[in-house]
Image (tube, rainbow over all chains, first blue to last red; front, top):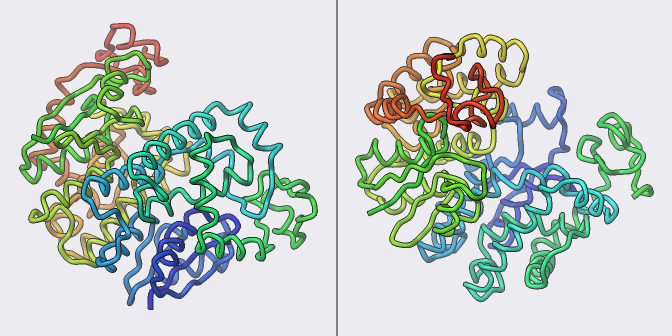
Length: 244
Length: 244
């Protein structure tokens, strides 16, 4: 049985991607959730070290002793291992395009990822307004995302970026959640796609788990009132959910 | 004929990777070099826009009208298009590991990439010493690279990371150049591998072109004496090669 190591479902956008691929394609796997931590002595870091993960990060896929890290490598591995499942678009040219936008996300959209970290259970419209006013890069990232989605949905006819659900949709699922949390503006066709992603049964399952988690991690909470730093809030055993 | 759009060979570490894959495997392609620029009205930006590259970045591969951007997507596309060439390791588990370290490089090693940008024709031992003393992240990145290389060379017996030359070696080639430019310290087995990469005929060809280029770009020259900012040096038409 495949094992997927993930972080907190409320925060870990990278964990969400391969988890969503596995769930959406109904592939059997065992999920192992580790509480995110930057402390070298934490269960998180020690568990990853014990299975031979040199990066100290999630997600990690373990298959019969083989350790695969980094989201894109995990997705490529799954696409090969389940070669009869259309994890990537089946058409070679569409597949190349899907890989382009996933690689683009893998190393890009820094402003959006930095200023609007995934926080599924939070509702932060004020932060969204402030970030949009102060960080020009966030608007540029959103414009690129809206352009990309609009073009692909028009070209392939929807409902997903390349027609059928694929790794590419999983790759942009955390963006869909961020747009909801921070109330970020998008054109209508992009909003419709974002809502479809959020309504996907696999995404609904992840989000329900995230909301039930109530395990707040300071360094992933730059905007939670009263938390302040990595030392505050949940890190001190005092979830501050009421302050949201 | 495949067309690969690249930036200045002296600086463009991302361009180097797919170029090296194509050259090392003797795959036919036409190279189109664009002078790196951040100016929206530059030939660089206008050319990329005209072929439909939404990111405004190199490298870009064009194959019969299909535009593939982002290095990892280009490498995956080449591996599929030339499926009988061993661009990735042939063994499925080795291939998964190769993809893990490439994805790790694709989004990581930020300290090394930020503080020691590729600059093939430069020789900057003083900068290397200063960066190592001031930026703890650079030493951590180097330690991870040395550990990764040492483990893979021991496991597969060399001479390349996975035995035969693969995309993984191309992915770390810019690191080999940085280590030379900034005189960064490595364990002996890692130095031997770095020297093999630099001596590879395809890498030699790229480096010779880079040294002959003499086309200095201010924003890629944080350490060139007398250049100062993106507005100085070559941007003002005054290459400062003598100041190296």
